[in-house]
Length: 320
Ligand SMILES: C[C@H](O)CC(=O)SCCNC(=O)CCNC(=O)[C@H](O)C(C)(C)COP(=O)(O)OP(=O)(O)OC[C@H]1O[C@@H](n2cnc3c(N)ncnc32)[C@H](O)[C@@H]1OP(=O)(O)O
Ligand SMILES: NC(=O)c1ccc[n+]([C@@H]2O[C@H](COP(=O)([O-])OP(=O)(O)OC[C@H]3O[C@@H](n4cnc5c(N)ncnc54)[C@H](O)[C@@H]3O)[C@@H](O)[C@H]2O)c1
Image (cartoon, rainbow, N blue to C red; front, side, top):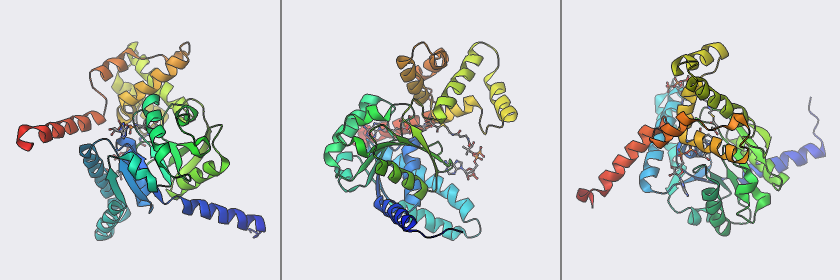
């Protein structure tokens, strides 16, 4: 039986205040991860602005969110499909889009960044946002592999900066790694934990170390599968089947690389290799490099091709 003490009441009310504090969320990057984060935040009653670099990309992101919401609704409202349609429309109403990050952060409580895995690009973005966002706004990066402290160094709000690392596909994966960099305040960290819970996720606390928990284990494993194949010790198909049936993983390492994105996986391993060139776990893979150079990025390749085609159509003389 739980006794109500003054301390309990204080901690309950401060956690309620933190939960209430994050109402408006700006998600930057409408790709694989950003679209999923926006969807989950909007589904849990947050008001969301999704930002990307072009209207075409944002249209694709919104279509992707709608398709994913329909999959969720099909299960959640199996008995009452009309409630499912109402749910989809209600969630979509919570999401607006923009190509101007600086102007939209002026009214936001939390910025979650999910753009390309490149330190300089992330620093430039946060440096610009820092000047425009209100004092209370918390900044968080969904980086897979970069130090949160390095990204935060382009801002003057080191205490209000942390990591929120989601997993792909965001609507399905329950985990969020919440990262406390050395300068992240306890209040910010608590607010990020509460926000993750408000999304219906299970947060774990992480230090600001390379790959946090999951990727520090998962990325070397996926790369070792590629090396195993490069050594001629197994076909891609057999390696995938082996890890699914022999280790109980839902996807084999090649399927997972395809799902995560070969470009993102390459950014991660190249960055770690640069910092720790003697670590064999971080050795670059010639096969991965070749596929990325050929524009074969995995599952997202079809999406990117589709987008480029749309842009060509929009830019064609008939449409100008
Ligand atoms: C690198 C980064 O920094 C970190 C990372 O993100 S690492 C990657 C972490 N992710 C993983 O390891 C994913 C491993 N894979 C899985 O867990 C599962 O394969 C999976 C959840 C993706 C799909 O489940 P699975 O049963 O294999 O396949 P599938 O039949 O397609 O999906 C089952 C149901 O899940 C749901 N679902 C799957 N993806 C969905 C999505 N994007 N949106 C909504 N619902 C979805 C649907 O309800 C679907 O049923 P439906 O097909 O009737 O709509
Ligand atoms: N793919 C995964 O499984 C996964 C999982 C967890 C974390 N992450 C991390 O999340 C981030 C995004 O990964 P992703 O897979 O969604 O990438 P993605 O390539 O699918 O999407 C990135 C999006 O960001 C947009 N973008 C780039 N620069 C921008 C800018 N300055 N302003 C606004 N938008 C910009 C791009 O147009 C693109 O739509 C990366 O840091 C990645 O490491 C990825």
